[in-house]
Image (cartoon, rainbow, N blue to C red; front, side, top):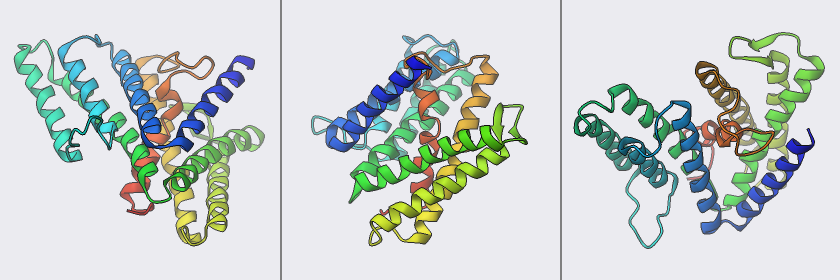
Length: 263
């Protein structure tokens, strides 16, 4: 528990510091996390990191996760980058004479979209007008939902939410996390009512709680399928990057796709 607490405090403080700094610092952090997360995904699928198709996946994740490329390079549109990644991975099945199977190419591409776009939307949120506010709102709603589900579930949880995938989650905890996330959204609305109306604040809280829970369950289902407890060991007591960001990777795209954040 002590190691977990220290790791959480240090990693959390470093993350918040770079979020506050913004600009290239935060984007570089997110790109690094995306690459580390993709590395965990590759390892979960028992694929070698130095194979050609896997390296294509790493390059695609890097490009997709960065809304602003360095050195003045032109950023390709998301659909263009996603299509090129798909084409190159499919082409790898041909050039490797089927040593790269279609199933492997599909798995690698799924990881590219899931991880690359998830982190990209986090970076794009910071680039919005008043981006720090929108980032903090979304993160705090996610964290409030997680904390609320944990503590309320431990205190009052009786009915399992999805025992076949995550035996510790309860319906009572999920509802409690949802309520607390909505409360946090409303608090942000009271802080800056000109930027965030009550209705949108409630919707963002609901989206963060529901999508965040689904993101957590997606990772739990995948790890259970692969027979592992954690996606990695980067953060002692916390697991890997995907263990810590599973909710983020779903919530940030959702709030953008639902146009809950300003364009």
